[in-house]
Image 1: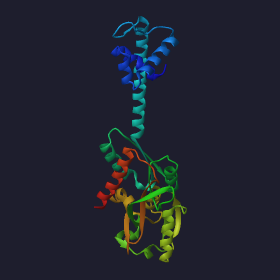
Image 2: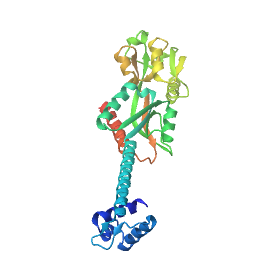
Image 3: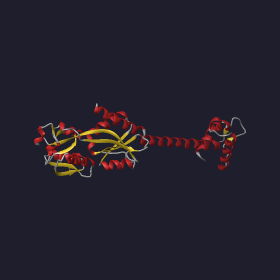
Image 4: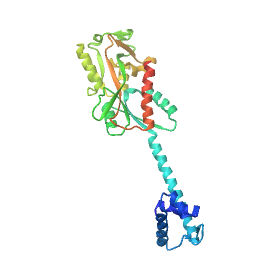
Length: 298
């Protein structure tokens, strides 16, 4: 008693004709008649009175017809529920981002996402760069935002933005009176750095080496928020993207000194698995990220 046979019985009863029910179910009349006969043998009852035209359901047929309608209704409800679950899954976009993208900036992206996709869900997690890469590579995130990423056999790295790096100092630092400095101005200064295994610190170290500048590293952290706090409290100076200092600059907690010449940038890229097929919401998020960057660059 499969679903196809239940639909056949329902249609025979409705149209009072085996031939019409057969056509509706894309069966030959003989195949439909055989299926009906086999079912009657299995149930040991007669479902339709074939001595009359048009056909009419027997009392047993009427009972069975109610069963058919109930099962088919529940089958339709199950199909609709599964479709709704599938739609919900397809309505989720998962984004992994490095900490320094910034909660304030991400809140703007999330707000814009909600406007464009009010029935969708955006899941955001903040991770170290290598964990962003792993989350994307292992399918735990659809898109990633990370610095210094390069495309590989598994991952595509799309250019997103190049962030100018500046010297961050506390308002009480003597350098705070200046708007720009040569990198030599921080030679010998106490320095707050990133963990030395992070790509951003490796790039800063190369830059300092290229310009023959030595700093005294006092503290190292794996995220920009801790570095900013240490600098704001006067523990030393640091080098970081100016973009991540926006709120601190507005509130006067930190000062940003441009380097002369301005030649140090942090590349931030959008990463995703190569060949990944995006659902409509994730594709929309990707477009949104690109548009947001264009609007900021304009």
